Amino acid sequence: MEAIIRRLKRDKRGVSNVIVVMLSLILIVIIVANVVLWSYQYQMNQFDWEKMQENIEILNVIPPPTNWLSGWNYRKTHVIQNATGAGNNYQVRITVHYGTGTDSGEHVYLNEHCKTDFGDIRFTDDNGTTLLDYWMESYTIGDHAVFWVKIADNLDNTSATIYIYYGNSAAITTSNGTNTFEFFDDMESGESKWNKTGLWHITEKKSYSSTHSFWYGQEATDNYDTGTANSGELKTDQLTSIPSAKLELWYWREVESYPAPPYDQTVIYDSVDGSTWNQIWYEDCTYESEKTWTFLSINLSQGAKHLRFFFNTVDRLFNNYWGWFIDDVRIRKYVDPEPSHGAWGNEETYKLTLELRNEGPLTVHLVSVWVINSTFHKRYDIDFFINSGDTSSLSISSNTIPNNYYMVKVVTERGNI
Image (tube, rainbow, N blue to C red; front, side):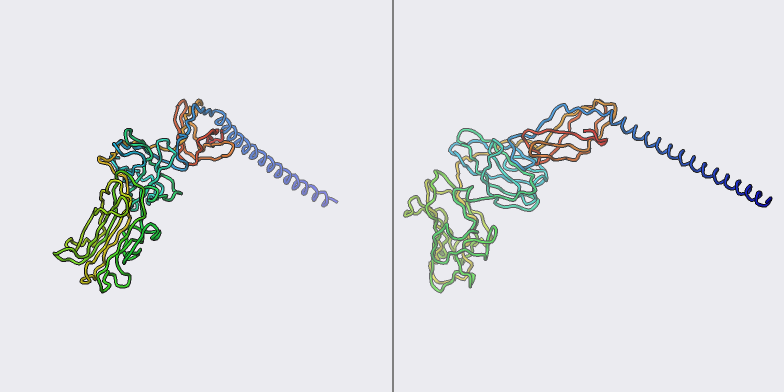
């Protein structure tokens, strides 16, 4: 019996020890939980306090211009000076440079804001949205491009202002020589604009631009030697008459060299009525063969409506040369003096500008701007700080911003809107 009592006493002490340990653990858990809860509540209260102190006021919203070509980020104005007799739809040349420089005359620099292939270049009338016809004559990737632009306004007595637009990564060129000039053919669309005889035909043997040109020669032999004297002409259909015009083209020519004319004649004529022809350019065997693409610019006879290219070997001898290639034939308006280039405007950016004031005691970090209307809902991410008491302007440059009515909201890093 005594042994049983002693055992019970010993077990009681063990139970007491267990109870003490358990109570201690519970107390520790309670203390730790309260510390964590206090820390979390402190942090939440600190965040809420800072959030409550933020007070950003939008003082003004300056929207992008409404007279802006949709989808483009940048533009400049340019003045074309008037010239007597120029009239409407006069073609002017503009050289566009990819990099930086000082705009002057026909040269404009786009500060690397356009595509390297210049496919996003557009020209508009002075209203900023009416597109003008243009043709891109040539370009060098990432360097420069040469454009011809048809100015819609009457340049007889008043200068015209146009816009050049650039900065649209999705755009591709809409260059169109036919719409730009009085007559145009780059020989890439077949022979439909011409009536031909003799050896004249479209070829891929040589070309100035793209892949085709017109050639007086033979594909099989790379010359104009048929065994006999031969000749052929290339004539346009009747053209629209303009009072004063220039014929411009590129040609490549190789014929025999002989000191006495008149062998291997290459001749250009124009005509008012299609029956009486005026010679406006001539070369033969006494002229050195160019054997390289050469630019030719000739004044047409007043009121000319027809154009004719003529090749004549005269005899059957020494005809084993390439012959005559022509490419990029165009007729444009021309007066003397021509309309000159006036001033270039500064680069303009399509942007939304917000004038903001921080009325709160803390520096505020703005992380996004929402632009919203009935059909548009877009967030623009930003990284903009504004100190307490400061007034600042925030600009967002994007060609996706609408230029009609919308609502603007700014979002802070702490989540205020």
